[in-house]
Amino acid sequence: MILPIVAYGDSVLRKKATDIDADYKGLQQLIADMEETMHSASGIGLAAPQIGKSIRLFIVDTETALKILEEEKDEENQFWGEKATKRVIINAKAVDKNGNPFSYNEGCLSIPKIREDIERPSEITLEYVDENFQSHVETFKGLAGRVVQHEYDHIEGVLFVDYLKPLKKRLIRKKLENISKGEVEVDYKMKFPAKK
Ligand SMILES: [Zn+2]
Image (cartoon, rainbow, N blue to C red):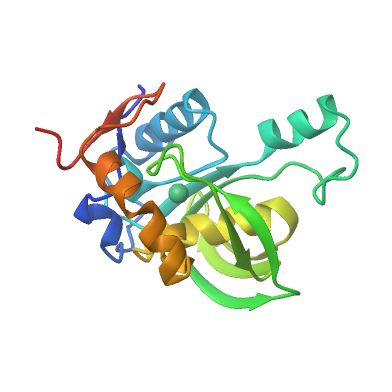
């Protein structure tokens, strides 16, 4: 089932999400629904707060984005030739961020039509459990490193626009207000906090 994606301005996107147990009710269905929702919106990552649940769960799938690079023969792209990463990440704790910081144009399904260059370290190491509650310690690099940092921020209540400098933030303030009111065109299902 495709779930509506919560738009910028909803308080659930600002909460620090909580850990879940293996017996969390309906977990496998929730994961399947999140995957369907993410793919239908052409996303490469989706965090549970974005569908209104303040729990430490997010999914990452870089396959589509990497396939597009391949189809466009975009060999200049910094992520060219990478293997796709597909993960379900639960109860994540960041243990380290490493590698040379670089700038990359990010977007977010909760903040449609806004893309900005954001600088982040190139790698992040997480302790987490997967969909079967098996423990992992894993370092994510490349495009996956980028997406995992963005999604990890979501379960900490942080959004990519928070990293913008004050001037840039002022420039997009009106657009952000409009998004929370539903005054934005999107081709996937959304839930707007301030829609009248
Ligand atoms: Zn996002």
